[in-house]
Image 1 (tube, rainbow, N blue to C red):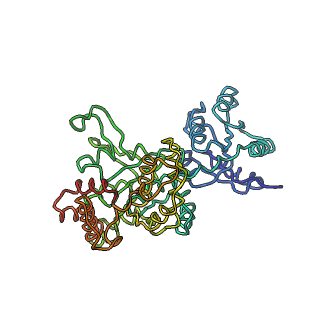
Image 2 (image 1 turned 135 degrees about the vertical axis):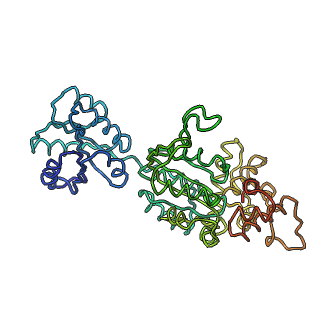
Length: 443
């Protein structure tokens, strides 16, 4: 007999679980049993299940089946293609009809008939709906060997709940990669909440991330969820994690370790179930050595490290990406632009692209808007004015004030090894001003 895949049995009676493991061991390749439905969410995220046999009642003296219907809805929300057979000691036809209407594949009454139970489970597995198609990629992968290797690592870690740290220069697509991981994960039906840590004022850190209760402070007219609660059951993406001051790092670490948050103005902890992805363009290892970033937090967020190479390191991808952007914006702005001249291609391949994919995208978009012919030339791209030190001979180089400011920012951040607070201090500006200027220049 050809065995079916994996069956999950949920029942609070351990004797029944033992009996079903023995009975169904010859029918399924694996029989997973749990005695409490509370473990369903985490198990469904970590295991591939082909069918579920779900008891209807778990609380003593309660036999109306509402618990089973609740968990049926939870299963169908997380895994809509997995068939669920309801299992109850009470032959209630109304409950059976209600369960089927809410998505159950069938209904089995205790005490069960072995042959009937096996027949029912085999039938729902044969009629099982195909798994959803793999979602289209949201990541601009390109064709380079560097990105092909990264893509394989992403496939391996996406279906786990491991914390991920994404590093890379600004403009390389760190948030886009986080969204790709979320789309490929078992949490894809949950929310993907992105937080720019550098843009949150220090005074609003706790209320933004953890939420607050009514009356917690002036203006708190009602309870409000923070970003952690908003991402419950999904993915929380913390961008620019290296910009977080030390005292706030401690609060974040506590939340991640305990998987609980406390809203501002409350003493009541709330459990949160999130997959954490962080990103930074800072050198966190150097910041740890300088005591600017907590070592325990670094290891907590860095279970898996994914590095996005700069566009300069993946030059074979420049032209394919440029063509993709050209097609997108030609359609969007209804321009008859179909390609690049040879001179434009040569210039793009030589240009350093310090702003990476974001700079390439903006360059092509602007060029398409201003182009009146069918092909983009070097004049449309307007890259020569943005050449910086090392790209042109020194005697020909004349910097604008904006270019000087941009280079001062890059040099300060580089000398301070990614420590924004120290770099801002040396430049004589606030950390928020430094961050805003770097955002402006795409650094």
